[in-house]
Amino acid sequence: MPQPKRLQDLLFVDTETTGLDPTKHELLEVAAIRTDPTGTTIISKYQATLKPMHLERAEPKALEVNGYAQWKNEPCTEPGDVVDALQKLAIGTVLVGQNVSFDEGFLSPLFTRLGMKPPWGYHKVDTVALAWPLFIYTSLEGLSLLKLCSYLGVATMPTHRAAADAEACRQVYLKVMEKTATAFKYL
Image (tube, rainbow, N blue to C red):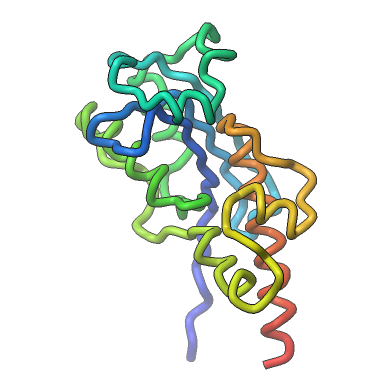
């Protein structure tokens, strides 16, 4: 007899960074939204800004895109406090993000530097990969978060601030999963 599926909560994440290379660039901001396994019920949220230690390594384009100059004076959270908060929030979740490997590439080393293992499970959900069939078979013109939000009619538009983008990612996930569920009804 088949066993019932044990579904895990989801952790929608977004990061803002000083560049694209996690070996030389740094986290500037992180946001996470923990939901039930469906993604519809928000259990908890977290957002923090971090002070870069090596701003001289930053890519000017990255700082321009995320608008760092406008928010660089916001109160910053110590890396250890970020790890502690994410440890509590993320334990046993499935990581979800728009190009989730990018975000994980910056988050995991933060845990490692502090002698901890990332708390989320090994399964990941990437909204870019989920939306790939829409890109191939519809008029969707690209897979950026902005293009996906526009195409899917998501009200929360991305701003390159972690909290807004994590929520936009969650909304994209819900819309794509709704389309997927509808398609499976016809199989």
